[in-house]
Length: 381
Image 1 (cartoon, rainbow, N blue to C red):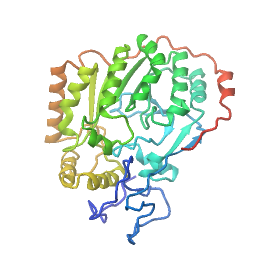
Image 2: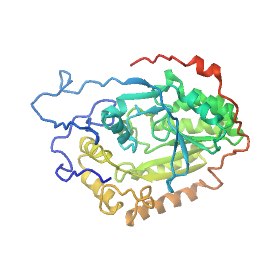
Image 3: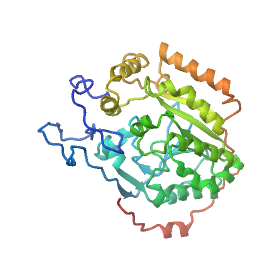
Image 4: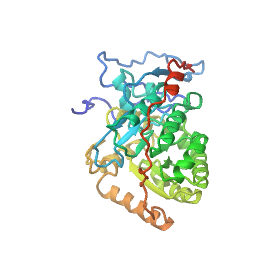
């Protein structure tokens, strides 16, 4: 399958769409699987605008979904896990760069505003997980929680799906790692700390920049950078191994902040660090360009030029060997900056990514758990 032809679409629109407060995407770009084609026409009216011309706030809707499976397996050589679990589809954090945005196209929805405002909660996730771990055919291996969504996004405060998933993982002594931008992870320290003490849990907090103004438009409903640093400290003080993921590194936007982010995280108690260069697969590319035009019109051309320098002249290269770090002179310079700073700060100085699988308990599915969640009711908000 090849990427759709976008040669006729201007790189940066003359009049970029107006951003919505609290949202990352500035458009509801059509998904690549939609049959009917839509074309935006400027007729002088802004749909849903307030009297001062600003777009109205977009209400988040949460829908219940009964998933058929809950564990996703991959064999990608550049991904450090083979099994992942995502309690939600879509993510209200609204990070404009999120590589998972195109997955909303599979639902006939937009990877743009729909991805961050139409959230699907897999209400039977804990029960499915328990059944999977009870199968005689199940081969225990570490699970990555919250890869294509944030498991502690705002909806989790009320729904507690992630909390229930962790309860199952804890009961079965099933090791897992989690990555998040939410301080809500602190709520579950009572479950996570004992697992970490047994070598069954580790966490990573994603911090792209320390600049709160940039973060507010880049990842509008995630915790602020300062609050994420506090979460690193809280988790570390609870005995939980916690690292920082600088992802993505965006040239001329977040890239100048790399060393400062690493220093702040090391001071907060992070034990390891990693980074990923900006990835723009499928619909993420036009969405990101619209965001650049709306928020950084003065440097939009420079950003995309540097991205192409690290992607073999293209917006994106999906090759396993280069997709995470890029290639070429600028990618090499980023790599050197990262590793020199990591060595100076003493990060990554010990083995990481090793979880103890020896205490896994297969058990039987809990009938009480299944019965108590047969007919959950989710509220829309």
